[in-house]
Image 1 (cartoon, rainbow, N blue to C red):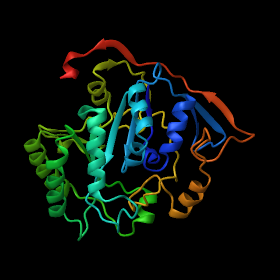
Image 2: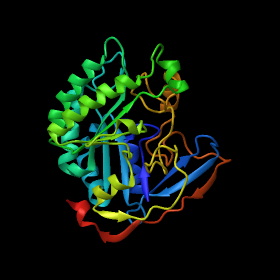
Image 3: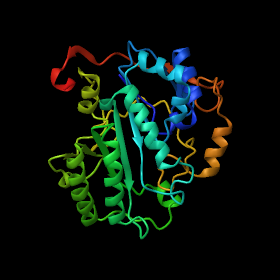
Length: 315
């Protein structure tokens, strides 16, 4: 199975101590975000967890604990999506400077491997300040650096969830014409630097020779990173247009401290601050502890590896 950590919050940036504690304990408890008394217990065991996937804007706190990080990489296969965007503090008020993220990205790639490290340039939105020309220029500058440490980049355009519209007043969708312009330019840049672009839940009309719409955390991407085939159980996907393996997330909504205006996972800043006050690094839960009315059930966990190395994926 694939264990996901990044669809609901940024664990490496804000909860690395807790995560390492859970790895040492060998399990983690996760509340259902819609039925809080329903709790799932996941074993953190490499015999049943084929890969742990991280999605973060700041992996540096995990890197700071060098011994724990090395132990993590020697125990589990991991995949790292690191989001590095060209926005400033008016949009991402608590995200570290881009230069720091790039340095952390380099370290992750050197330690975990180039095929297990992916750059996310998303979400893209257009304003007078952050124009299409600005995105094209910034994407090219970052691709020149990051292509030394990854062979792929995930790109997506802003989705106007209700939370996003509430916190990001006046934001609009990116038009099809703007999307075409940006992807055409990004494709040329990516080709120059040997990058494959994965579109995240976007129109297949944007697909080009080095731009696919097959998913960023898809079976194919993770098989290539693992160097073997996966036999993934049939299940309903989170979104019909998304082929990514997004289940089994151990995070929690309304807990990420970055404060990005476009965030879909946080309701508002006050809720995040309140939840983070209830974080206990020693608890099996990311936020709070066990309650009397909790119904704890063990997750169904088994390895999806078929035991056969795929020579094509190792190339």
